[in-house]
Length: 159
Image 1 (tube, helix red, strand yellow):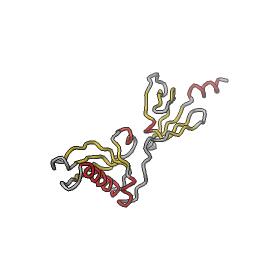
Image 2 (tube, helix red, strand yellow):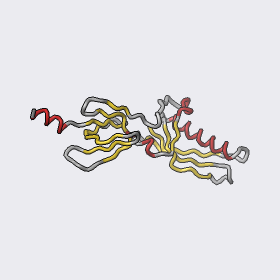
Image 3 (cartoon, helix red, strand yellow):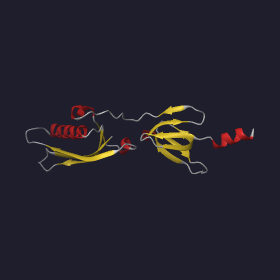
Image 4 (tube, helix red, strand yellow):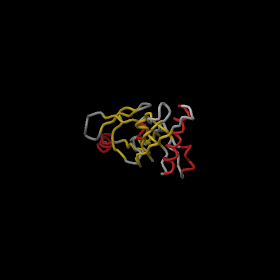
């Protein structure tokens, strides 16, 4: 009986992050967006977004898959540029590896503002795919000084 009660007291859940790191914790609450947990021998409640968690293995043996809001595509090179995901939400890249800062500029007096913006995003996606990354976090975007037409977009490429 004593051994069984010790096992229950020390039973832990395993939280596996998207970057494959593991946390041995006790999950006290799980909802659609977050988990609330405590570390062993602590009472402080901590919170993590499920966007950065791959899955949870509960002490009972049950496994909960945590699907990221954005699925990162596999990129084989520049030809896969259309698969690259653009995000402005830093949480979408939590747990991923930042490869490089990346930027793109475009514009012409012969195209509309919308077309110039779309061209700038396409160039950014092509540069991102060329280095084998599947997602780019936009960190800044502004007019490029070509009247009202040109755009400069700065991002961070992640795997």
